[in-house]
Amino acid sequence: MAALELKRWNLSIGVGHPLVVIAGLNVLEDLELARDAARHLKAVCAELGLPYVFKASFDKANRSSIRSYRGPGLEEGLKMLRQIKAEFDVPICTDLHEIDQAEAVAAVADLVQIPAFLCRQTDLVVATAQATKAAGGLLHVKKGQFLAPWDCRNILDKIKEAVETDMTILCERGVSFGYNNLVVDMLGIAEMQGLGAPVTIDATHAVQLPGANPKSNGASTGGRREGVPIIAKAAVAAGADGVFLEFHHDPDRALCDGPSCLPLSEAAPLLRTLKALRDAVQA
Image (spheres, rainbow, N blue to C red):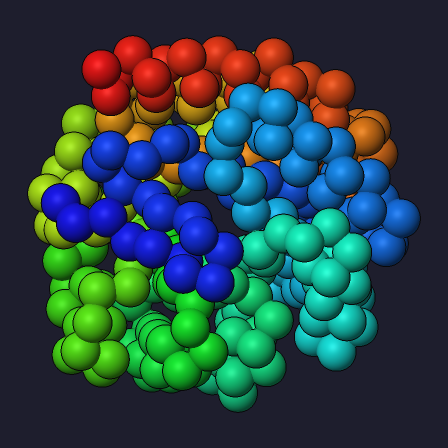
């Protein structure tokens, strides 16, 4: 499996390279919270020698309820991400949902993310790949909850045909069998790597309980945040090339997916363990 490089940041992901950490907030709430998360996570990763990418969404277009908080939107959200990028000198990962967002997002984000629900939307995938290649970034495509690992070959083929280059990182985030739960098959990581792409684990969304938050009577997603370290450690032990993690200074008050994210204070011990696991696997 060939590794991929984000040249402007001297960041590589794949076999033979350090574990890449894509971490931050589920959704942008305000600039100060984003600053706190970026400052803390960058410092932790720098101490551990792990490549770091700040992640936050400007719009959560797939919320369970129409009344749920979605984020500041494209214009204000990209402005905030641009500030974080400049102030902390970190690459940015964010997702998009519509074709006409591709160029604006690729101009700010270094890893442009295709959400799991949209990974088979051909026009969106192609437009995002083309805009991201033109801007010099990489794609981070989450495997749909409805796909087998080997089905990602079609996603990679679409992108390769559209841009004639390898630029895609695949992300495992569990499979849904309905009934408000997700299951992660660790064997899928090697299957996806076998398609020729580096693979990350989204340990945060893998512990979601879709439509099962008792506090909202099913109008929002529940979660089992105590499972995040378990999924992350298992995936790194299985050979994952990167981890995708979401944090909040007070998860119970987070405006989106609080039950699935970790307190910011738990970042350092978890990442220290994940680095040790990666080192062991690489050895």
